[in-house]
Length: 337
Image (cartoon, rainbow, N blue to C red):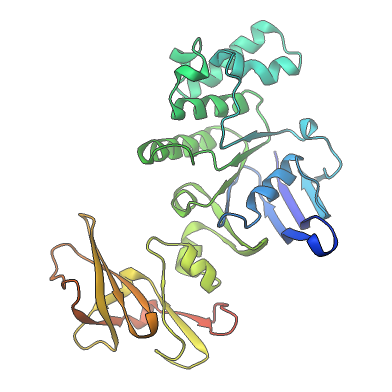
C-alpha cells in the first residue's frame, strides 16, 4: 500500500536575486495503485517534483508523505521507491542478470535468491533470453526493459519514472507503453510517470496532472482534461493538433476567448470564420487543413479523406458547432462555465 501526498511543496534553487522557483506550492494526492502522469513542457518542474519524491532533492518548504509517513528527512534508500531514468543508467561491464540483481546484492540478499528474483523479473519483461548479454549488445528498448526489471526486482511500493521512453523510436515507444500499462495492472504498486509527451499521458495514466511554470494547472482523468481543459494552456498542450483559440470577440463577448478542437471546426461556405489554406497534411485516415486568418490567426481543421478538400491558397470559411465550444476568460485564460 502506498499513497503519496504532496502538501504545499515548493522548491527554490539559488538565493536572493538569483533564486529560481522550480516548484511552486504544489499539493497533490496520488492514491495507492494509481498510474499518475506528471505532464508538462521542458523546464516546468515535473522532474524536480519526481526527484523530491525519490529523495534526490529536498523540498524548500512543504511536506511529503508516503503511506501517511512524512519522509522529508528519510534517506532515499529507506523510502521504498524505485526510479527509472531516461538514460537507463546500467552498468556496462555487468551482464543483464547482474544489472537486475544489483539492488538485491546491495541489500545483502543471498546469491540464489538474487538469481531467482532476477529471472522472475526478466520473464515478466521478456528478457529471459538476454540474461547473459551485456548492455552494449542490446537495443535501446531492451536496455530500457532491463532498467525496468532492475526496479521491479526490488518490489517497491512506488515506481518513479522520468521520461523513460524518450530515447526509443516511435514503434518501440508504442510497444513499451503497452508493456508498462500491463505491468502496472500486474504489480501492486503506485506509478508516478513524468513526460512531456501528451500521447503517453492520454494512453497510460489513470489521472494526469498538467504542470506549467512549477504549478499544477489541472488534475483529472485523461478524458476529463481533454474534454474540459481548465485553462488555455491546458487546452493547447493537450491534443494533437492543439485546440484552436479564436481572438476575443470573434465569437461572443469581447472578454471571452473561444476555443474549438480541430475535429469540431468544419469547412462551411456559410461560416463566419475565414482563412486562407496554408498547408494540407494527408495522413491517410484524415486530412489536416492548416489555414491562416486575419491578424496571424492560425486554424486547424480535421477533414475526412474522401470529402472535398480545398487547395493550398484557397480562401475557405469555417463554422464551429455550438455544443463543442470552450469558453475562457480573455484576461486570465481560466475556463468559464
